[in-house]
Length: 521
Image (cartoon, rainbow, N blue to C red; front, top):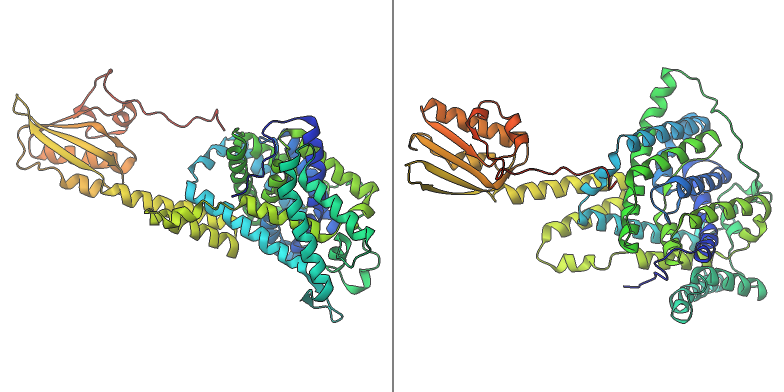
């Protein structure tokens, strides 16, 4: 609906300015996700810095931003509540190691198994989650400690500056693309709010609303460099059993969200990231997080969209965002604390508009109702439950739909050749869903002495298909008849047992199946 891409080429100026913009947008979400996980704000900020720096430097997708994320924070909260933050650091280290192993064993290629409707559902679900998360910025804490909706002049100021931010981001690129529109919008709104001394909530107000009343006066975003420390947990089997379930879920959620975000950015920029390298980059970043007091994380679709729409294409954009965020923590926390929330909410609202796949409504109106059901199911599960669950359910639903559709697509033509042999020409895929229909297509009892099954227009997809051929060969053998099998691949021929001797080889005409390569991942 809106083309927010300002540049498709990487250059130093765009990367640096875009990185500064991203750094400003990282702060409130890193703090918010730290509270979701039940840890201190600085642990979330450290995670955003380390994840962003390391994945930008060694990951497989230049221009993609990583940091502390809500998808992983909700997995951490129970572990932190039951065992403490040191066990979280141990779980993050183990999750990082598992992600590195996933990259080493080249599992990144499996992201290509995610169907297009599932991808759309993932994108739409995350867009809705980002939108709903921003609505929380329109609440304040009353005297009783309850979160209530803004009212009166504070609400009008918030809405007005949110709209102004969105207007600047939308219209400025039409006039000039020299600087990122999001950065201009944040600076402009901040200057107006403080120049006019308006009653507008800022980043530090948001942070203070999330801590007990007795801590509000002293809370700040200022910090120091993260330091190395081995998690203080017992190194025994009991600890492993405590952290392993959480680590596995963190590993899966982190890789799924990162690889799907990578695929989205690939489509937007007409480039191709390296999935296996991204797995390793995410793993190294999470491992370092665990040793340096960060909560870990993965790719952030919102901040990645801000970066791409602001012109950030190269690794320098993510590195700049991480270093600028660290500089804010160490030297310029008051500058971050004074940014109005309305500016950041406006930026994220534009991210929602740019992220949501409005074309998905066309699928709903189209004839393919199965894809529409998968799409909206994934969207709903992403919003209501969890990204990893949504993607797994979506892939399973798509696989079942695919199997059901193709189970009835197998057909056969038969004729008797000049030698009196009956030739069955098979058309369609032979797999677990079609084997029952395949068996019904033949008549071993009434067929002549010689029978030919021609697979020139068919493909055997799984072991169920191979077993069906073996079973058919056995039936013809029991009738004392000779079966001839033509045009199957050498791989299938080697896997056959009873029917292997019936295969007639033809080097020029037999198919050669190609297997997905790891080189593109």
